[in-house]
Structure formats: C-alpha cells, structure tokens
Image (cartoon, rainbow, N blue to C red):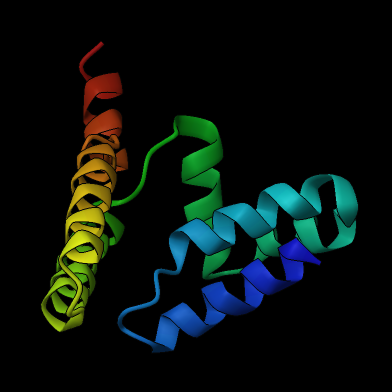
Length: 121
C-alpha cells in the first residue's frame, strides 16, 4: 500500500515542480523489496527510475542533476510555504525542518565525484 502510494507520488513529482520525485521512488523501492519483488524488479529496470535507484543502492549517492534540481525545489517550496503561512510558530517549524533537511540533502555524495575518485585510485 505505502509502496504504491509512494510510486504514484514519485511519478506525480516528475510533472509537479513542488513534489520531489527521488525520495518517493526510493521509498517505493524499499517497500516493494519485500512486498512485491515483481514491482521492485520493474522499478530497477525502468529507464527513468532504474539509474537513480542503482546510484542510491550502490553508492548512497545522487547525480548532480538530481541534487541541483532537488535543492532548488526544496528552497522554492519551503520558501513559498514559509511566506504563505500566517502563524509564526508554523513558520519557525518549517524553517527548522528546512534547515535540517537541506543540510542532510546537500551533504549527499554526487555520483560523478565518486567516479572521479575511483579513477584516481
């Protein structure tokens, strides 16, 4: 159930600029790993989702394109939410959540850097 909802949200995130794709696809993959091996295999063989999932499972890393797009959309969506919400403590909660998530997100390794490091060893 959660895997299906995550997959639908991840696919919607391709078309909706505020909804992130990557975290929902990763969650769907994790849910399908035990619940539905057929869907799990389909996700990993999918031309769009497969490379992203392989990068994450092999290297715990994302591509530079995914990282850039994610950072920009995170700033835009949290910034808009903070601007629109009228209640001060909700604004502070959103700001706190943004700082924590953004710090975690920008520290994720980039697959291109991992490839360059392995070539130098």
